[in-house]
Length: 396
Ligand code: COS
Image (tube, rainbow, N blue to C red; front, side):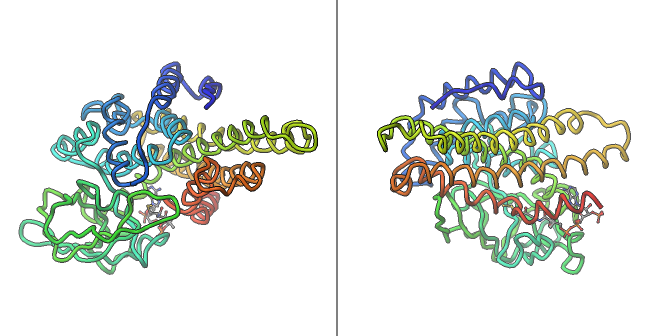
C-alpha cells in the first residue's frame, strides 16, 4: 500500500494532522487481525485501536481523549487511513465515535466520566440506536416509546440496523417521549446492554459483514440518570451527532476509493495483453485519471467540511444567532461531502474492478471486498437522497 501523505499538507490541515496520518499509516501496516468472524474481529480491532491510542480521537481530552474536543479533521484522517487497510477497522473506530458522540455533545459530567473514558480505553463498545423498520430516513416516524415512571423510564419497541448490536456494552437509544409531537417528542437515553428487557440477539447479515442486529426493548426499565440531554430534545441531538460524523463517512469512502485506485494501478502495471501492459493503453491511463479526479474533488469537499467545523464550531461563537447560522452552514457542507464522496467512491471502485476483468469478481480479491464494502456508505447515516434533500433545503 502506498503511503501518500500529500493531501494532509493542504492548508486545511496543521502539522499535527500530517503527523497523525503518517504514524497511523505505519501502525496499519503492522496489523494482522483475522476478520473471518466479524464480531470477534470487531472486538479485537477495538482493543488494538485502544491500545495504540487511536480511540482517544473519539472523545474529548477531559474524558480520556487526545484533544480538547472532537477534532473533525483528525476523525477524517483516521477514517481515510484506516479504511484504506480494513473496512472493519474503520467501522470499529467510527462506531466508538458515533456511539458516544451524543454523550460528548450532551452528557452530564457523570455520564461522560462513566462512558467516554471507557470508550477511549476500549473497555466499553458503543452503539447508536436510531433507525426502526418504519423510520429510517424519516426519523420522526419512530415508534419506540419511553414512558416516564417515578424514578426512571420504561422502554418498549424495536430498533433495527444497529451497528455493534449484540457486541455493544451500551446503546444511545432515541425514543418517543411524546407520541404525537413528531420530531419534538423524541428523547435520548443511554441504555446499558445488560439492562433487563433489552434483547440484541437477532443478528442481521449484510453483504459487507460487520456486527449488526435488531435491538428490542420489552418493558426495559432505566433509571432517570440515563436520560441524555434534555427531554424531547433528542431529534436535534441525533442530527447534530450525525452531522459530526457525516464528513468522516465521506473520508472512509475516500480511503476505500484510494485503495481501489492503488489496486487498479498495481494490477494494470503487471497484467500483459496485446503485447503490452494494461497500463500502456491510453484507455487505462484515462480511466486512472478520471478516478483520481473523482477522489480528489470529493476529498476537497470533505476536508473543507471538517476544517469549517474545527474552525467555527468548536470555538466560542460570537452570538447565538451566529452560532445557529454556522451550524446550518456546516450541516450543508457535511451533507455535500458525504453525498459526493460516497457516490464518487462507488464509481471509482466500480471502474477499478472493471479494470481487473474477471479477477475483479473473484472472492478474496481486495477489489471484490471493496466493491461490497462501499455500498452501504451511500445508505447509512443518511442516504444520498437525504443528503440531497438537506443540501436543497439549505438553499431555500
Ligand atoms: N442540527 C440541528 N438541528 C437540526 C438539524 C441538524 N442537523 N436538522 C434538523 N434540525 C432541527 C430543525 O431545525 C428543526 O428544529 P425547529 O423545529 O426548532 O426549527 C427540527 O430539527 C426538525 O427538523 P426538520 O423539520 O428538518 O425534520 P424532518 O423530520 O423534516 O427531517 C431529515 C429532516 C430527513 C433531514 C432528517 O430526518 C434526517 O436527517 N434523516 C436521516 C436520518 C439518518 O441519517 N438516518 C440514518 C440513521 S443512523 S445509521
